[in-house]
Image 1 (spheres, rainbow, N blue to C red):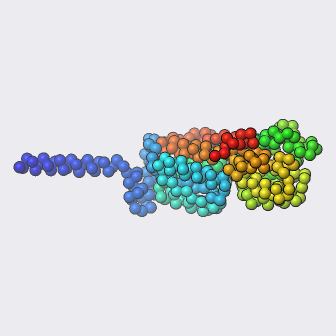
Image 2 (cartoon, helix red, strand yellow; image 1 turned 120 degrees about the vertical axis):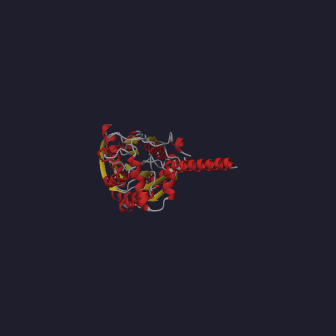
Image 3 (cartoon, rainbow, N blue to C red; image 1 turned 120 degrees about the horizontal axis):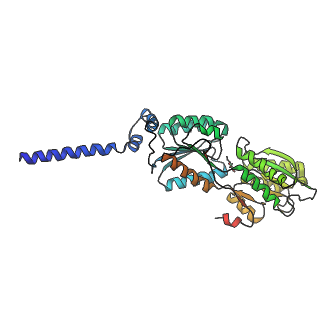
Length: 359
Ligand code: BGC
């Protein structure tokens, strides 16, 4: 009898011991969910950096914070939907927040995500000029971070090795816009006066995409030996209504002199088209119009002959690459200075291949 009791007791002790060991195996998930207050949460990132050198396994089902500069941006809407779908499809818990084009607001959102102890951040900065501050914040918290869409300089990124940028080389999109014009029967010189007279509708010039598209679209014309004349350049901040206003004003001021309308993105080009139609001008007959992004609305207009062309800014490709890089970071990858930009290619879209891009 005594023997059976003793045996029972030792089995019980063994079971208790085993259970205790088991609970020690899974602290990260338990801590973030179970442990109550911010103090504990705030310690989590430091603890993680403490035992750094050893790469951790990718956190399937981890929590991801996504910061978007502005939800009303048409292209970033496609992009953030793609991100959400890919991340959720892989079992991550995703929270996506709207910076409402306000850097102070976005800083707060980043800090909140850090306090909540997210496993990784994907950030589309409101202002490229805020990159230093954003990087310092995520670095202090030791959060693996993927920056998207608004590219900081290599030097700015070099300070933090758990940081990577995913985007496109905007020079390429500018060059392709110029090529779309060079591919027209009269190479953009509709009135045959020996020069291409254009207006430029620019995105937010704080963003390198706007700077490069503006520069390289015209450079492609000049490099091909064409003479160019800039009638006007106005910032439209990526927004459709601004595109419409700007082009309405320019058409009123310069009328038939305008042969080419360059828009740094499609949303502004769609706005531009409304004004072109209102002014009784006909795209591809007496004026050319090009954008960038390949938004669904723009693809329809290219197919209908109401836009000369656009350039695919591959939102799904970039979202896929951003998640890939995020998972590499979660797996312990670090980036060497000068190797922190990952680019996805742009693609020229014309009436000939537009159907390939339509769903
Ligand atoms: C896109 C624009 C978008 C901007 C936001 C650019 O790459 O072409 O449509 O408004 O990113 O930063």
